[in-house]
Image (cartoon, rainbow, N blue to C red; front, side):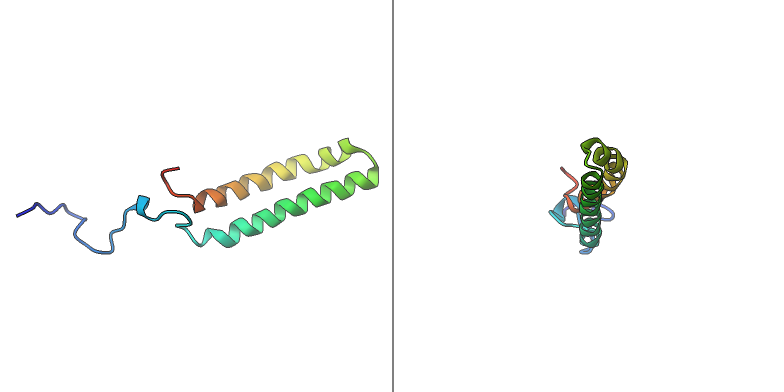
Amino acid sequence: MPAVVAGNDTPDNTDAFAQGWFGDTAAIPHAIAWGLALLAVCVGAYVVGRRARRLWVAVLVGFVPFVVVLYFFFENVNRLLPPSI
């Protein structure tokens, strides 16, 4: 008779590595929203740079918001990836 390991005998006990891609489907709308916010920051910085007619103004205005929004975008994309990556 094989030994039963405690905690592994229930059918609802799933392995975290078996979830695969897009395991946390609750992160999909968040990733899309942060991606759209990232696009809005880029377009906003572009518009400000075009009005000022200087590239450095666009970079100055858009750099910090871009990095902050990019961080949250990557955090939500990370939730969609399998744990082994």
